[in-house]
Image (cartoon, rainbow, N blue to C red; front, side, top):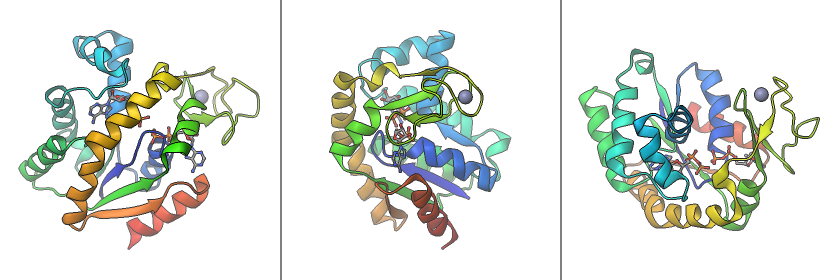
Amino acid sequence: MNIVFMGPPGAGKGTQADRIVKRFGIPHISTGDAFRQAMQEGTPLGLKAKEYVSQGLLVPDEITNGIVRERLAQPDCAGGFLLDGFPRTLAQAETLDDILASLNRGIDHVVYLKVDRDLLFIRLTGRRICKSCGEIYHTKFRPPRTEGVCDKCGGELMQRADDSEEKVGTRLDEYFNKTEPVLKYYDAKGLLREVDGERDIDEVTAQIGAVLKG
Ligand code: ADP
Ligand code: ADP
Ligand code: ZN
């Protein structure tokens, strides 16, 4: 199964992707995670990405496309993959079509998690991430049993620098200007499956499960 997750920052893509990749046994490819890892390691890619990520801006297509091209060619993607946070521009969507065509593959479903802007703001500013295992929490909607501590591994929870109120506004603007047009692109191809991302986490997972079966 070749799946693309789309939706604004804070829609729940990462939360749902963690669950769906476990169910299908396919790799989770998150360009955001790839950039954060490169930034932490201080690689040349990370240094370049940081200029944009830290401002809440999209990283240029030339940089982003290369990462996905390399990753999709890896053998573990042969049985399917879940792309989370890519494509985010029309040019990225066209590049993805080229990459997949060259691998003789195609997209099965584009799952669009729909959430209103006001709620996205609350989702993003309350998001907390485990430093050790990456588990995603929320101060209100998915609090850990002990404040600041991961339920799964006991690791310390942190807030992403770009989840500050100031950066969230820029990121949402980037989404509505550059990424939303990509939804139309996939709708025209008959691939878009809209899911109500405002429901409870379990209900959203169930809706996605139904889409992927159908
Ligand atoms: P994205 O990857 O789309 O940016 P995340 O999965 O990181 O989104 O979720 C953003 C924040 O919203 C996190 O704090 C997460 O715990 C919370 N969240 C995700 N899905 C839901 C949901 N269905 N209801 C309430 N909160 C949610
Ligand atoms: P979220 O879903 O909460 O916006 P991500 O982790 O997917 O967060 O992305 C974090 C940041 O990484 C983005 O704000 C952007 O700077 C960069 N990024 C991730 N994916 C892409 C992409 N496909 N194109 C350009 N920049 C990206
Ligand atoms: Zn953890």
